[in-house]
Amino acid sequence: MNPGGTTMAKRVSASNVTAYYGAFKAIENINLTVEPKTVTALIGPSGCGKSTFLRSINRMHEVLPGARVEGSLTIDDQDIYHRDVDVTAVRRTIGMVFQRPNPFPTMSIFENVVAGLKLNGVRKKSILDEAAEKALRSANLWDEVKDRLGKPGAGLSGGQQQRLCIARTIAVEPQVVLMDEPCSALDPISTLAIEDLMFQLKDKFTIIIVTHNMQQAARVSDRTAFFSIEKTGDPGRLIEYDNTQKIFSNPSVKKTEDYITGRFG
Image (cartoon, rainbow, N blue to C red; front, side, top):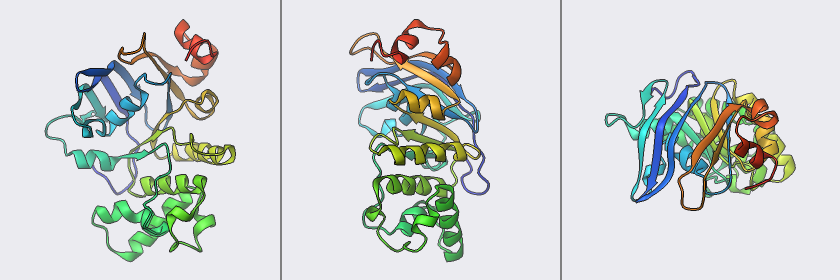
């Protein structure tokens, strides 16, 4: 893992990934590969393990007591669960945007964006200034906030706050960006702004998004992975993974079609 420097989107590969919460098996034998500079949507009914799988990719799943992951997860062929891997470096390389905007409430807009860089030891004002402007421009937020960078980030609208969180995520130049239902708390106009942003960001990053919004998955993603469970209490499994156009127009598995057409879920 080599954070910083030129952003290089990475390939993410899961091989027989199984995740547990204590004795409960949340997902089982997930196998998929996400190519660099693409948007991949994870869809499926509630409780099927989409967010668990997403959090496994940046080793946030194991933060919970009793939680663990089996199998192999690689970022460009480096197994991020290998015992010699620095977990902090993994999380620095793989950015995360959460369901609800979560700017640091006591920090200004500027301080929010550069928080990760400062945590990594960057102190030079010219570097921080340049990185903040670059990240805010990339998040399509610069023109809206450039004259109030010293104001609290929490004072922005919900949609602006989420774009601020995306700016904070990409300021440290990760290689993969994970988004866990990033638009579920936003209005339709803010949602479209975030979706437009994803199109632009995939030129630099590998993006994986969890969404319950079928239209959003169809609009923003190159590939779609459909997760499901047989019955309550069973582990989530990957039912089908293919080009988004095929998933939504001609899925190979009937269960996928039933979910997409609203027959269940």
